[in-house]
Length: 114
Length: 107
Image (cartoon, rainbow over all chains, first blue to last red):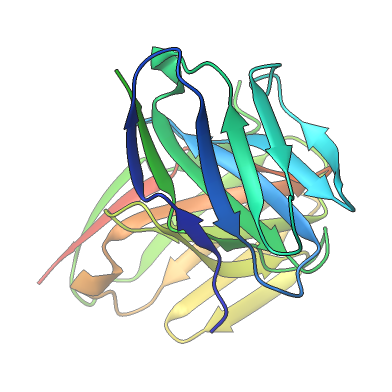
């Protein structure tokens, strides 16, 4: 079964540092997403990405966040200057089409900001 | 008010019991997803519904678009079904998640 892979699985970083979370979506998928889940809370949408540009983003996705698809396979989430409240599990997801299609999630990247 | 509400929040069952988890939503959707999250955190898609009913093994999912309501049923529950079950609706290029239902099935 094809899968979405994420690295790192866990990262601890100092407040104010830049973090890059990496994702390799399923190869024939066209829609990519980042979600996050703060410990004990529900999963929240951050950003969706299609055709090399952001198609939708949430209020959480402010100027400190950016996404990139630097080559044909990787999809990255960058947090420029991390804050304590950025500590969360970050999930990458991908789907073949936007609607009416199964969305596949990666195993997540635990980010701890200290 | 949450756009996606699930009930119950927590559910305990004995092995073999029939389980129902409910989901109501208040926004327009193009599809509804039922997801499973295990203690390690990974999320697995169980169903994607836009109408009617789907069945996969012991799992059945139904949706009523007019009433904006969906249910997930587990027949003959087993301890390995213990997980958090999440309802999420697809709305303008994103999933909106419910808070999840924590299910524990005891032998």
